[in-house]
Image 1 (cartoon, rainbow, N blue to C red):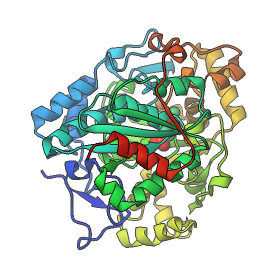
Image 2: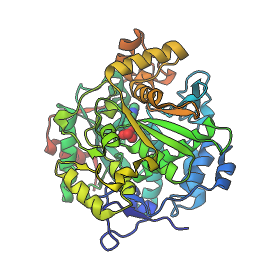
Image 3: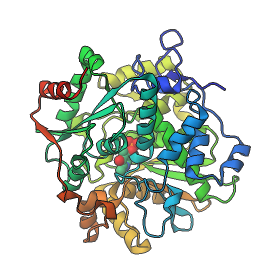
Image 4: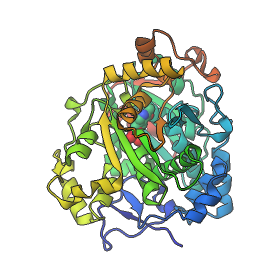
Length: 482
Ligand SMILES: *Cc1c(COP(=O)(O)O)cnc(C)c1O
């Protein structure tokens, strides 16, 4: 069976169908849409039965083979085997089994935490990004090409990208971050990397200033082509595909037979993580409900409750204690809406013409919105006070420390939980990453994985710059020979 990808905004004449490796290195489709499989591959009952006992790497190979038909099987197998090994995902809670890669930790019967944050940067983004690093290296070598990844980060994405790409042939990373705005731990995580292909740039400004520079450089098409500027943002299809795997693994861990159903609760920001859950469900994984949790930035919760999608301006976006969910516009949401509206690219172009010009849309009066329950989504939101209370209660009741984002997911999961089905909450970061709020909630420091103790004392490698597009461009010119 061949697997081809289409754009959410495409039509057959202007958007040719692409293969997996053709879209791997890119971001948006040329028409501005996002790539999705032409149709979702299905997971048969026989496959579920065969897959139940597979290791994470073997399961990843089985699932990803449904999405990738232009990498020879033996090569793909070697790539996933190299990616999903226990020594990469070693930062597990004591008592959890690192060889599971994403161990399920039962808080009580029927309520589990799926450990997705045991990788090198202690956030779930490692799960997909580590695979992306190996896929990039492989595909670039095959094409004899290079790429220079340019990005802006306020924390999690940038560090996950750097740890995935460090030492990879054919790839350089230029990562902008706001100077002195990240925590000492986050700075140490990124800036202590000494790999020659990793370049940290601290911009004397805010995250938005860094983001604006990245946009400006990427919009200079001549510069972009000459210096082979690429990105690894959350709309990258391979990241979404890699995330489908842990829903399958989590389903097996939470059930005894393939007749059972599971609910997943997902702390959400750009809708990438839960989009993978939606795809797993469309493929036939027995997921009853996808419980989407937001923080105070509740643009997605509002949509699932009302049918109105109203992206906020940056001025309306709150800085919260679950910062990786502080988004105003959910970049992967278009993928879900494409399915919701019956895969109508004309309608998607209409709706996103409004979004891209700063507006929103209202599906509440349409039959599409009536169809929403068929997709299994329910939603809720969580506040700073909810986060603190959830962190406290979870620690007191179960002796388990959760991070602020996971706390948002857990809070909404508890609101939505039904006795008849297991609820699996995705753990999207470890508490060590967000010490300040843990101290506020519990009055004590979270435990740090051994490998990260004292990283603040390591020598750092970072270039500090003013908010200047030209300064960033000339830094890239100096470090990339063309
Ligand atoms: C990125 C991130 C999220 C949000 O995930 P999306 O895929 O953007 O919805 C939630 N929690 C943490 C810790 C993250 O790093």
